Image (cartoon, rainbow, N blue to C red):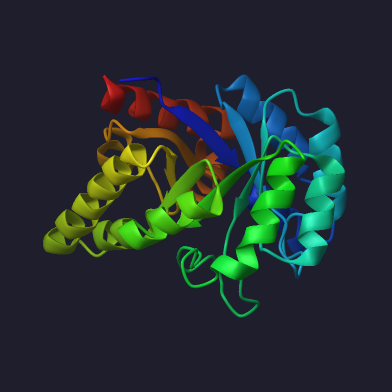
Length: 246
């Protein structure tokens, strides 16, 4: 199997900063630490309400990063213009609701086809690689392909919640759905990524799925960094991913 890439999401470094309205901790500094620790890319979600990552953060990351930037965003006119201005390596289109605590599932690529078409086209025309954050569902994978997105990111949230609940049957069901969806997506010609809720305790079964090329992980790594430091938290995740891949 090919080496599995790790994208480190730095959103919650900004969450900690914003809790006090201070200039620290700096997400760009976290991104540089992540790169030094072995991250293959940096993910940042610029939300409509700017609850964590800010426009200035995106300015700094786009200008200073030496590894690829993956910008997560909702399919809105404002976000499209920001992406076209900064031209990150990739854009991952995600659903977004103001009232949610965190992203609650994948985007409805099938049901929102007509809305999403111009976003995917304009991003692709600008040379930005487009990813669709979707639930592990064959209909959504086919819709992503039909939209012209070259990448899908499978939402692992339901699987991770089942692990936390110690629900062995649900873990089995959700893990099988991830495996099947990854295989289907690869057959459709899509590059497969995965993420949402991954931790040291649940990452290995996902990392072992051969069709998956990249994992995007953030909240757990930032939380673990409180105890061991960001570099160490990332290096341990990298080690577990590599073990699963071997």
